[in-house]
Length: 262
Ligand code: F6R
Image 1 (tube, helix red, strand yellow):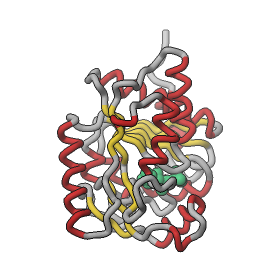
Image 2: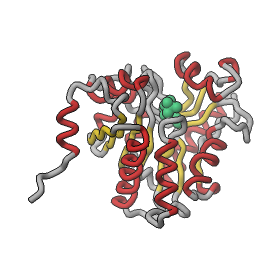
Image 3: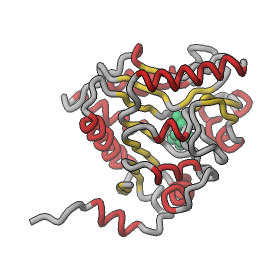
Image 4: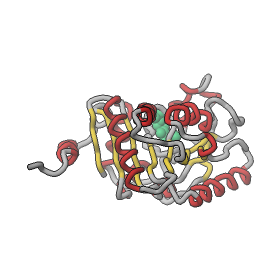
């Protein structure tokens, strides 16, 4: 794991964008496949990618975007459905083509239809040749995607119940708690681990405990984001506030300096 701590959210986003671009360059597959998280954490990163496009350093016009998750039961076109969110916050910002955006189909509330949608999503990711770089945020309860505590470490895309904490945290995007869906379709932890590179962004003190548990605690389904420890190419980009609970901080800072020069 590479753990990069920056003084503020802006510099955290800039470093995360570099980690994404380096991962896409390294994979050298064209068109590349970029895994997309929603929520507040990656917004600065997406804006940085937009700046890289404007500066001629990146081009997402042929890139496929693959969402991490989607709510169950929101009608197609709902502004807080993750397809709409990613169209606004990623496609419009980095120039990713809307017809290259993949989002699990959570529009039904029928169990069999959702199971079929989950299987179709796994197949779609396989057909694309897997995800080159997966952007991730972390829940205050340690969730990754919407894999809530207790999720199997090898899980695949499936329906999950959202925890009370996650529904409260996400109520800010809706008119109120009652409007937040109770269920979602989410890539499983095993699906996420299949990406060639993982880039996690976390900022703010509300994430400090989850970050410390995920990076320095035991690998456990009780902290789903601890599966990051299992992946050979994980880059974690934090601001000072989110890094505040890390015990091994000095080592991460020393490692980030790289090999000695001269
Ligand atoms: C979003 C997702 C979630 C969020 C997490 C953090 O697609 O899967 O895991 O990344 O809930 O959300 P924010 O960034 O809003 O704090």
